[in-house]
Amino acid sequence: MLAAFASARRIVGVVRPSPPASPSRLREYLAILAGALAAGACGALFDQVTATISPEYFLEGKGLAASSLPFRLAVAWTGFRGGLPLGALVTGVGLLRSARSDRFSWRAWLVRMMAALAAALALCPAVMAVLDPFGVREASLGVWSRGAATRYLVCWGLHAGAYLGVLVGVFLKGRPALS
Image (tube, rainbow, N blue to C red; front, side, top):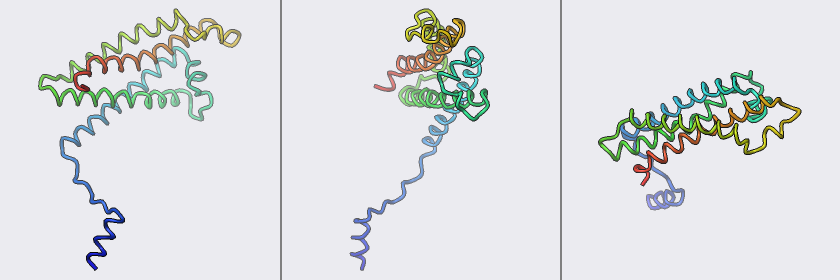
């Protein structure tokens, strides 16, 4: 009987529960969650500002015209969701860096991320507005004014800059942790 039971366990593949996560691992998970939520809140606020610049970017570009939510709530929800992975990435790479160096400073890490973000937020909207690389002004003739098309491009550039700034910051400053 015991042999049959042992054989059935092997066939069914009974898996023993894993031991609970260590307290430090739990703190790391909570830090990543906190970083994601903080960036989500920043994303919601960022999108409120950019929705003021160009509602068309959200209504047409993000498809919020079809949303059943009120406009500002839909914008906030979109920004919150967009910020979550960025916050998790910055926090996760920061945790990797802190585990590999006793000289790691969260303050310095976040200042570097903010510097990369600020540079991209200054550069990308200007490039989009000047170059119009996707022909938005021409494509929107007769639908939007030239000013609305330019605001759309600026808003698009701000959003591209937000993602690019974080990714460049993580790549440049997080590389030691990733190698």
